[in-house]
Length: 83
Image (tube, rainbow, N blue to C red):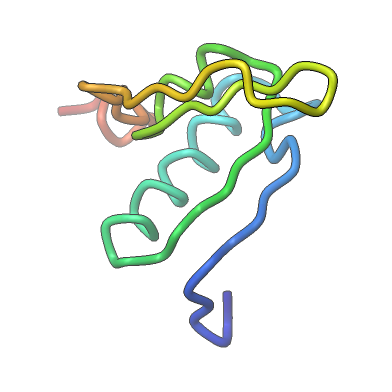
């Protein structure tokens, strides 16, 4: 991220994290995406995927679904809860 990439690949970035830490990671990705960075995120967690603008589902190496998320969830962190 130091070199300001145009694409960021993230394989299970919230795996093995507690939910609060996962939300921080998603908040960072959402912020980067608003700044123009394309994020390709691989996850098995539907609740994490719902934070994105598009979900592409694969099975046996084939695309079985490609959907636009009309209202992606906004990551919530402790700073949001104090408001």
